[in-house]
Length: 351
Ligand SMILES: NC(=O)c1ccc[n+]([C@@H]2O[C@H](COP(=O)([O-])OP(=O)(O)OC[C@H]3O[C@@H](n4cnc5c(N)ncnc54)[C@H](OP(=O)(O)O)[C@@H]3O)[C@@H](O)[C@H]2O)c1
Image (cartoon, rainbow, N blue to C red; front, side, top):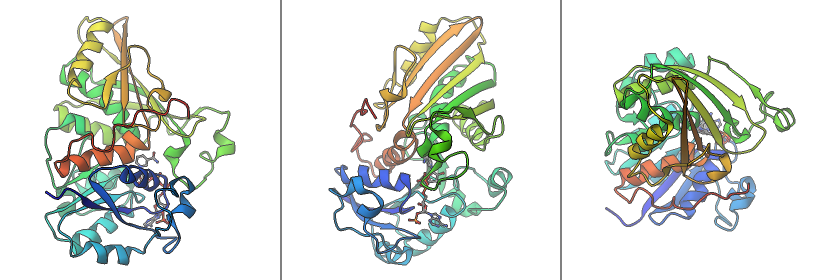
């Protein structure tokens, strides 16, 4: 294994791509090798991400063809895909056709490789994406929930899903809850990406707080499928997302009926034990706050018990643990680097 692996990014000027650039710059083993932009090839990275100018003073976006040409002959290469769902599968297909090296590993942060079959994907997204052979080269899970590297390439479960799965997988694995999981989640505005739209634009979100897509969000079936794959249990995910008036971070609150009498201390001990060897996941000791983790790859959890039910709270940064950081964590594992490489920076505290 090389000491340094070239890292490529798809998804150009997007928020997640920007976070990938920030993390790659600080990474001891991944070295920036190129980023493709659909809309701004030739523009400097600093023009799209002024805060990254000290790290990338003169670097420019390239067209996808240029990136594919640079990728083609390489042995080891890390490719992070932060393109929108629907576009990502086609871009990944072109990469796989161009670079047939077994030293290529892809982590797709979009939804396009999260399901196991094209039909499951189409049922949720309403259109086809990757074919069956391409999907078979990917698996999808939070890294804390599976051992080793099941496939050459990995699909990141996404931001809301990461926060939810961290809370619910230990409960399901210990048969601690009935299979109806009621989950309320709040996300910051970066969760909606760079392009303003009605309902996600700052003047709409600022100073307001509202639910959207109640019990109909596309991440619920993704979470159900991933949870079933890693726990062997089918749960019903009743998910209500909310728009929070802040830029980054996610808080989710899961509630369920307990299958047996336990105390809050016992549930916290059980969850803490499940993540004992996981450097990024820990117990908060109280209801966790987004500022405990904002801009970091850490997650914090806490449970309370009352009247035969449990509430588990989980916080992550949507752009780091929920996207770019989780992807780097997977890529570290795919290249057999220490899993926390480049990811140990703690939360900013005040954002
Ligand atoms: N934001 C989050 O918190 C979050 C969390 C988890 C997962 N994700 C997923 O990560 C991906 C990126 O999210 P984001 O928030 O960074 O979105 P974003 O800010 O909207 O950026 C996506 C970028 O993809 C590029 N793009 C747009 N259409 C394209 C096309 N047809 N072909 C190729 N590239 C295209 C654009 O950059 P160029 O024009 O420069 O190419 C765009 O800026 C999405 O799949 C999203 O679902 C996001």
